[in-house]
Image (tube, rainbow, N blue to C red; front, side, top):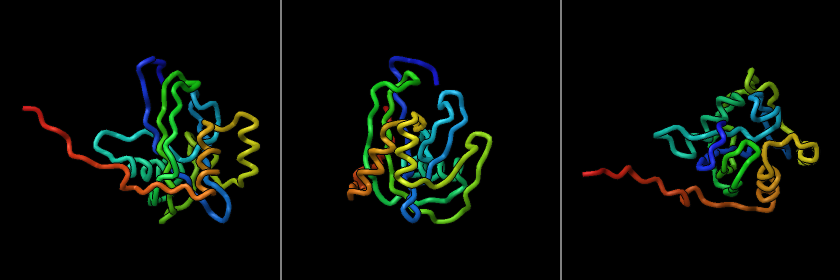
Length: 157
């Protein structure tokens, strides 16, 4: 990611829970420094935030997911990569697929909260929002998807 003082990135993340364990993917790109993250990424033009989250889970973890609700929206004004980020973290349910790894995501799996805390202490999480979202989800944070209003593009003329 280029360092640009006027850049903000939108992240669409999936908090996926299975039997008390949380899905994380390890990212191999240089800027991620082999840290772990929720399956997440940027929306493409024409894609809703929920569609982007579902696509990212499929691409990064091999899982088909359905976002159920927002856990939270987390802003980091300046990341270690030199950009600002707004992360939309969705509580998502697995609807199919199977966990797969790739060159970009060499480790994909479920971790306990304690294991995630250990990754955080070691500086191996991509952002503080990961632990915040997990704890807020466990505490019952639930923002309806309808909070995000999808509107058509405006026309000039």
